Image (cartoon, rainbow, N blue to C red; front, top):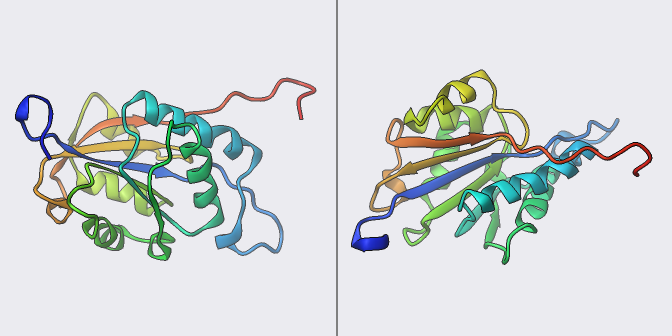
Length: 185
């Protein structure tokens, strides 16, 4: 990957926790839908990624309904959708499992988006970040809520080289959509 001026551009791992989900009675965890707030926040996450220049070259998304819907609503905010792979291993994954999936990413992918669940995503960000800009690491340590976005930048020949402590946490944000006005449906 060559960046502007011929230098090596950093790779970016963008981590997006699914938007707020509902808890309907009798619905298995994997099948839980987004709550109304989730339907507002997921597009806001997509807009935040676009504003930060972090539209992915590839997205890896959990197969859980709430993660898939978060992906759909976020990606709809971009000029063109990125390729996506729905991977059942991301549902309930811990850090080693998440890294296994990330390490399989083709070398030509410069920006990878991972859409999934806590506590795995929060722990992954904290594991990979050797340091962070501003108070981004403290924010992740405090809480990685629904719709949270973390961007990790690092230099490496391919995704297998991404290991704990090798990335810089460049962004931590929690985009929120506008609440409906009284009387809106």
